[in-house]
Length: 184
Ligand code: IMP
Ligand code: MG
Image (cartoon, protein in one colour):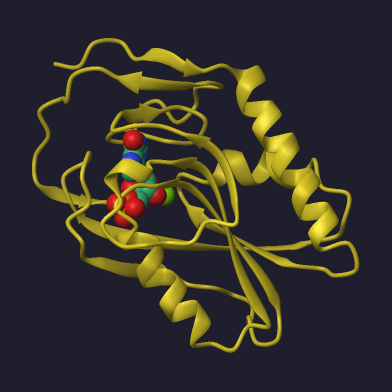
């Protein structure tokens, strides 16, 4: 059984990262209206906080990607289970994701996105687990770096638990989980 998760990043630390990223995006896109694409479900809190700190207009869309595997590791197979409502053709797109771990999920989605003719694509990620990368993914806006730790809170789950927590915590022991389909 997993022990109660312990705090890794406080609400203040997260807010500082969000404010810093929002400032950078506002400067870089000063004369444009980018389309922010949030990757559900994990990025929903991050995206909501991020847009409220921007000083530029943006449009927002979501995708929902699914990877097969247990709840703590992605299997490498990714499929889109809810797609974009807006066209990305000619748009300046910023993909907003909670975590890049192996890089498999985002690599798959970014390839698909780039084939749809956007003017530009940038990637904004709250938590970067560089040490676990299997596929190279270029991150343009990054919040925090962590080692090989499993985290929850601030929209991020473990088996659908803990998304509601306002801070980010790490799960100390891997809970026993069954092989099933999970949403990244
Ligand atoms: P990747 O395809 O291995 O990069 O995994 C990406 C997705 O796995 C992330 O978007 C998360 O939804 C999920 N994930 C990776 N690490 C964690 C974690 O520490 N806690 C919760 N979900 C995670
Ligand atoms: Mg995710």
